[in-house]
Image (cartoon, rainbow, N blue to C red; front, top):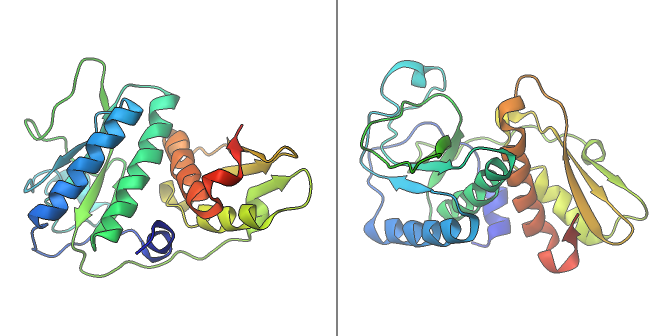
Length: 226
């Protein structure tokens, strides 16, 4: 399965079966996490066999069940770190899909369990990502018209259309999709956020996810970010 195929196949899953993730898949994920941390300066960690984060309190709101494994998306504060959390987190989400696993981005409905992971001075947990074998494969949200999500200074090339198709499949907070991609005449692309009161805390994270999807669909060799 390619990354683009993973984008099309992957949907959010909140309920998981009692099946441990195999050791070789754990290693593949941790190797990828190490590369992501080195490239981004984040402090992403994989927590396994830890059932408490989703067993009390507000986990009920998110309707999670059977979560024992999750990615802790930790790093510095600020917009730059939040965008990196989205970008590199989605890389790991798609890798998990390629490994036959299911995932869900989680903003609030989890408990921080003492001793499950480590934070360095100045670091915060931006979110977590549940991971494991889902009870099902999730469902696709209705697609919105692509024209609502981009602006172009001239004719739209095929690579940009492919990128937009992938971007519209990006998971965003409460499925708000508060982003616009702008194609400039010099083949640079600008990613902008739109105002959202409901999802304001996750706009930069969502933008990082969208940008990763766009790159996969468009091909990084065809454009540069502005």
